[in-house]
Image (cartoon, rainbow over all chains, first blue to last red; front, side, top):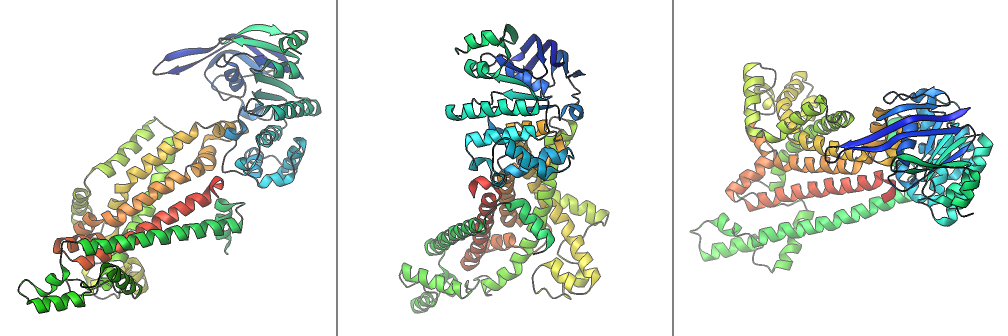
Length: 237
Length: 354
């Protein structure tokens, strides 16, 4: 089954000063269920925008997009239907966690707003999944290391048991020593929960380590599709 | 501790250790004490360096040198400055702020009459403007650029830009003289003005305790227009600055994450963005409070209400140094307490600063 199917996907940003800028130009993307697909390319090539469209966070786009067979509309993201299907992990865990909310509060919120039963049990399970002790619930983002924060961000995404995890450069804000820990954790969780992952990175080594296939993006378009064997060469492994 | 207090404390100070709260409170009190010492030194310097000679004011131009010297001695003006400062502090500790040269009454007694009136008026106006200002800012930030935002902008700017004495006179002409919806000048109708004891100086409290429902209703009616005018005067700054702070926070990544969690726009605004704007919001509200405490003079004059602003203005006209110093000291202490409390609250509310 197809997890993501994008046809002729285009998006643009418009500002008063610089007018309209095309960010995505007729992008074609197909990601199979259970696959880890990478998107690689320089800054500003449209990788993050593509992820935000899939997460329903960017609504100005044209073309056809479907997730697990569910068709998306630009101004009407089926949030209720896709919330537990699609979740996203952001690049900078410190900026993406509310500075005044403790870990427990931040993690309980998606369960609360979506009326999901047994929140306490789910919270403990999510923390256990990412290797964090229950005592971390009391801490605030500024009281944790970068690696711990990203684990919390991953736990937050896992709480709703997503089938598709969108990862927007999840290790770029972390030390090299912590990057490998987080990547291995993501691989373990993918296997445990049978998830599909779409990973954005500008680090060829990360893409090669994690992905089954990848696409190179350039200037808002797909420039090249890389298969597993090509990825090994691309990442220098 | 009641359930409501417990809930409030959990909402604002969750996970704050008692030792941390105690440390913040102790440092805040120390800071307040140091600022108060500075204020006392400044008010003393004001009196010592003032070109007005209180001894001459007391005895007059035609007094003999001996009488003048006696008055200087009685007023402690012939002692060296450090000694006078110690005497000044000693008198303050005993609640002696001197005697007004204009009225011949103790300044402390006069301040006890006027300060509660200003405090009552300003506090009610502040509570009203803070609630309305934050509410309007939330609406503006929820639909920025919409017609709602435009209407709120016009309301906010009108209150701040129209002269308050003109608005007061128009309000009196319409709502008191023409429609009789509100009370006129003064704090009470004539029928109650001299029949009610005012032990606290707060007209709402004292009229309530008088056991005369008509007196309380009269106090409320007389308070309506000045409170609304003062509230509209500071509403603009509270609403506009809170709106700016809210819009700034709405672009942060934690807001995007909250959307990804499935939270709606109103939930995000109330539970994520608003608490994160507590610092600038509290600061602008505190500044509005200090403005109201010292700047209610025009409202007090138009509505013939006693108050600290009016008292200080009259004292300045008469060159009544003890009254000026007493009123300045009370205002200074109020400023220190408001700013100190605001700083302490901002620190307590932000886990990163605890």
